[in-house]
Image (cartoon, rainbow over all chains, first blue to last red; front, side):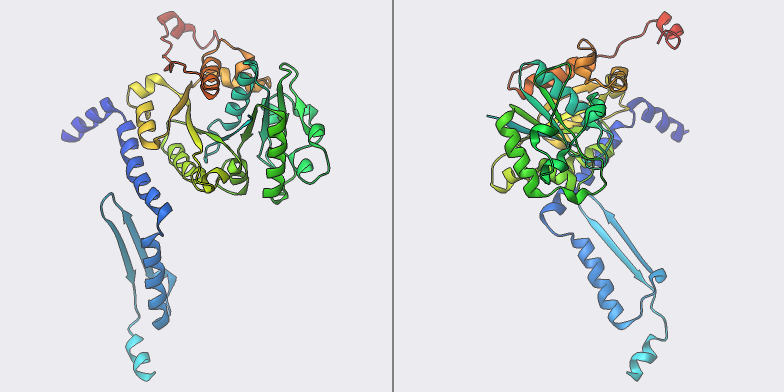
Length: 92
Length: 272
């Protein structure tokens, strides 16, 4: 019921307001990038570099998610570290 | 004093070449001496839109490399005697164009013409940066569509940083030209409207070109829109835009939707 109502309202206003809002958020971000380095990109690369100094990274086991918001952006780095890691380090 | 104008967009297919030809012809019709220069090396099309494809002997690269003289490569329009074309090369070697080569050609063209209009290739690579490199003014072409507006914003950033004018700390004049605009769809909220685009890009509006069959008709026959049918809606919009480029104040016409009557709707398809 409420979905139908939403759809009805959306049809009346059209998709242009959504386009406008998406563009404004995206461009605010991209314009920032032009003057300063891509912080999230640098963090992602350096984090992966540090980890790969200690562990052989399997690209399949690394998940990087970025979400660029208007006020806050998040960087999520999910690395699967094999359990054999501790033993190897102990030997070394 | 000659003006070098780059017509650019970032995104392909938004109407750079159509706009270059139409604005160039409109300025020539207003008595200015104009050359339109195709910078799309490897994928030249301005010759086709101008209807001069069978008259190309030498091109931009030949001149840049000293194989031909500028006067040999320039093609005079058959309809307007003060409109000229400098075609791009069909060879695939994009690197054939050097910054120095372009600089010298633009400097030479400045002495011969009132307007040097550079038709930029799509993208943000070498060809596009060279086309804008020596510009005094820029026309940023965009459609009322998100990807096109995003790329236009990117190009505006490049105009403000990668041109000689910007490097000298001078102001490069930028205008936005909105093409393929459909007033009805914008009014219904189905398409970004003029205010949305201007608010996002924050540069002055040069003109609004309506979505129209006349644009395709003109390109089919190899004639700039403003020459093919001067009374058509897009031709009038381009002519007004050209007058604004010349410094005239012209009231902005928002193309109105042509209301179709019942009979038109009924027979519209057949009566094309």
